[in-house]
Amino acid sequence: MAIEFNQSLQSYNSFGILARAQEMLRVTHIEELQTLIRSPAFKDRPRLVLGGGSNLVLTGDVKAMVLKVELKGKRLVREDEKGYLVEAMAGENWHDFVTWTLDQGWPGLENLALIPGSVGASPVQNIGAYGVELQDRFFDLDAVDLSTGQRFRLNAAQCAFGYRDSIFKHGALQQQLIPPLRDSALERPPAQKPLQALTLETQVDGPPIDLGLGLANRALITHVRFFLPKKWQAVLDYQDLQKKCLEHANPSPSAKQIYDWVCAIRREKLPDPKVIGNVGSFFKNPTVSSEQCKDIIAREPSLVHYPLLDGRFKLAAGWLIDACGWRGKSIGMAGVYPKQALVLINKGGFENPCTGGEVMTLARAIQTSVYERFGILLEPEPTVL
Ligand SMILES: Cc1cc2nc3c(=O)[nH]c(=O)nc-3n(C[C@H](O)[C@H](O)[C@H](O)COP(=O)(O)OP(=O)(O)OC[C@H]3O[C@@H](n4cnc5c(N)ncnc54)[C@H](O)[C@@H]3O)c2cc1C
Figure 1: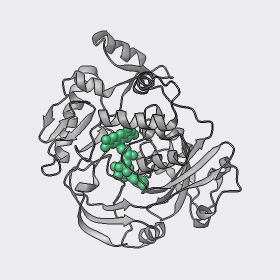
Figure 2 (figure 1 turned 90 degrees about the horizontal axis):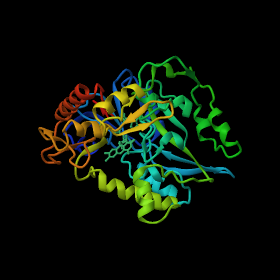
Figure 3 (figure 1 turned 180 degrees about the vertical axis):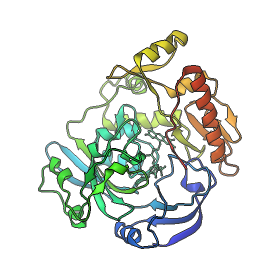
Figure 4 (figure 1 turned 90 degrees about the vertical axis):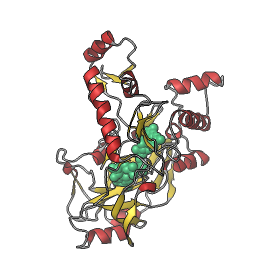
């Protein structure tokens, strides 16, 4: 594994922001990474795990050692009467993986088509789109502890998935110890075991891994496994998909049809990062109590809001930003996408790109005006460095 010094990160972040990594290492083999972690040179060094860079805002050069995840491979782990257990390594492109599963005849990930980035980053913010979240299809994942080099496996509960959230986005949580995996346990094919037993296939090898500290910047996800049930059911709750069903007079579309529709809708609504730099939705959709929702509706009758099962309401962050007049506005080379106010864009392209500082100044100005008008503090979705 050769360290690259002073590496430009412009083509490794979907905003196209100019920034450099003092040191960058391409992770192509897990064992090499483990050796590096255990070497004295790596000990106590800050590091940044980098996938496709499509959920990152770089506000300066990166001093931490950048670990660029390029682990490749995907396979069917097993099939039984209930479904398919499918695995991909972290460096696989997410959309290519979704396409591959559908091509194999294993539906279930179609609503998540065309989300940029890598498989390894998909659990970090529990990616979601068009009524499906990663956690709905997730089985478990393997990761390497960046302080010890130990490999470990987490199931969904241990990942603590939430809306665009997981244990990989957090520091200190309550103490929870899990045993690390022996490397041999990871390689052993799980074919003879019932699916549910897979998560228990952990073997103690060294001190347990303490999830209590949270796993932000502490772990590099190496493999992610998904369970795709044979009893497939279309998820068509989203208005855009319902419209497609009506337009095509097709109330029971196949998974491939949904995949095509999702790709078409996304291409129409979102800027292609290869053409206009962006990180998708810049803010999370906020959740408010029913009282707060009623209060806002009394002042703003057209507020876009969706009831949640717990009695609270989810508001459309894009609508709030739009209502504050931000659509099409800009600060320096950072702008608000004219077609969708939730997306911040790089207006200067690759030649004259926005800076991370401009993006964050714009984001803070938006936060302030939404807070002053609605009393809601919007939370950014991407990782800001
Ligand atoms: C046009 C566009 C549309 C988008 N639409 C959606 C959408 O519909 N839904 C959605 O949820 N997101 C969406 N996103 C956001 C983004 O695609 C996802 O968050 C994606 O999972 C990021 O993947 P990445 O590999 O680019 O991650 P990166 O940007 O490289 O990293 C994101 C975070 O994950 C960490 N990370 C990355 N890889 C690993 C790893 N192997 N192990 C541990 N940590 C890791 C990084 O340290 C960082 O904190 C969109 C982005 C764009 C540009």
